Length: 326
Image (cartoon, rainbow, N blue to C red):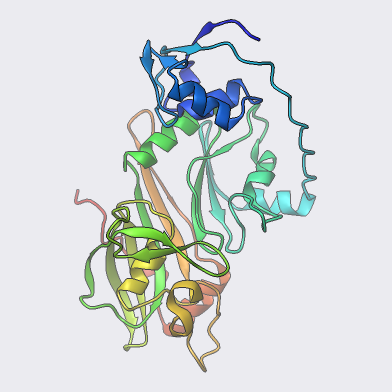
């Protein structure tokens, strides 16, 4: 049994959740045991009771109660990184400095692992060290079938800053999508709550649910091919799971190739257009620590580029309809 001790939150642990702080410092502490210690007030932050999701600040004092010697889990073997996969991942880097890596995530690559996911980005991040001592960290997610800009923090402090920027909505995100049909009106805001619902083959969000979490998306039709297909610019104000997919379907114009939310109506017959999902994280803009603006844009994946050409849409001519006025 360990003695009572007080530990100070380090600078690079700014904005870390309390439960994740314990996972970092006491990896053998079971989740249930941590919850019990929090519930009984044995763990305290700055002398006060705390909750698992509480965000920490540098210099805060954490009371760590006596802990039974944990049974250390058997370490999982590090998966072998295929040299070709590593080279392809490095070739997908759009921008890199001492704090940030911006990656053009290809469609079909999962960001994190799961029960049915053997290959995922999180297991491949050692390929993106570029000589740095730390492994880069994920700070946000994209769906497996969504392509485009994905940011990584190269140090714990940088990852914490980026995560804070996303949580405080201090980033500007622009997505491009091709949808089946043309929404009416052609510009607007979707404000529909989302909640998890039953689904076959994975998680599915339901729009307009009374007890759901608020979800807000701005949209604008950049161009249309008759009444059949529209090219949308999308700006998510909130960051809910599958938000853009669920909101486009709620407009009556599902994203092309998104059978989960659009069913058969998400596919075009007789055109030879790819059946892959046509959703792309086109651009992210955020402030650097020195106050300057970092803007990173990702080119379209191959299947979307072919579809744009087929419908006569010119990505080079597009402007961001949500960009702030100078």
